[in-house]
Image (cartoon, rainbow, N blue to C red):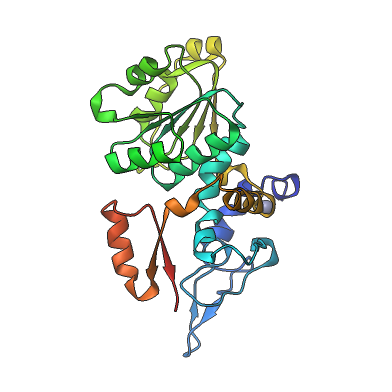
Length: 276
Ligand SMILES: [Zn+2]
């Protein structure tokens, strides 16, 4: 399609069909039961929960043997989304200031990406203290507890002129409004978080937006071309500049329900299931 042939595969015109419908392009299912019944699969082109998987070449990225597969597992979605938003979509300048709303695995990947880009001020806004602490460990220069006061005011207390870039991983309209209020002139805002309500919208002051030269952009998969970006992230990890091992917690496959519970309780950022 026009997106795939111009280096923007995450905006494939067939994205919803190929990633979510659970069938091949021709509508047939990839899995058949022993009774001959067709089942859906192919979530994001490959599915999971198996020791082996058939995939289209287009969905395969070669990675080196000397890095544990369980660390590389999350690179294909959340991690490349957060890092790519900063390193690709916004392409943040060295010395700039960035605000990241939400320090889950996507937001923390954005923090690591901001460090790689050389951002001078990296502010993470996150309600959970343990995640704020991890953001600081990963290179955030400031953290904000949204419960401590209006987000915009807290950001301006750190950097009165406002930030050059902001990333929203929350999908919460009130948070996105706060980001708009925290920008400096010519600021760029990237929207990553999926709202709970698909009808969600945010009011936009037109004069303010044009006078300040604001850009607001939606971002899928960090605008990355996986064949290029994932190997780049692996090299950064090997060089000690992208410590994604701090986000990953492994569980044996048989403990899949424990992994889900731990994620829901906020005890782990990125649970990864490992087969024997
Ligand atoms: Zn396409």
